[in-house]
Amino acid sequence: MKSKKVILEKLIEEQTLLKKEYKVKTIGIFGSYARDEQAETSDVDVLVEFVGPIGFFKFIKLENYLSEKLGIKVDLVTPDALKPLIKSNIIQETVYA
Image 1: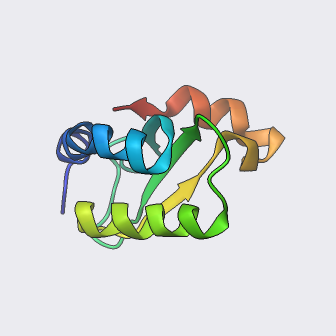
Image 2: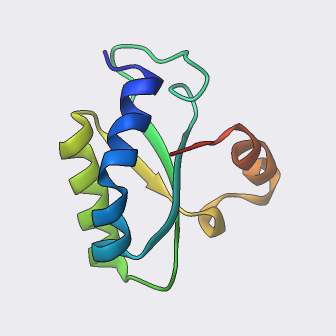
């Protein structure tokens, strides 16, 4: 099982490519990994903000790319996709790379 530190280090390593290929502005983790409460079966929740629109297929490609690089299933979301009732809590708990 990977740690929050290992995941964040990998995201930092990938930042140049993420910015160039996917127009990533900010990226971080939230949920069980951000709170160090992950289980063996946990996926990693990744909050990503883009410089501009990237389209659905590129979004899915990024989610798959991150899953492959991290070796864990990634659940990729944008701030706009968060439900208003939980948005502020998630943004507050997000640990950015």
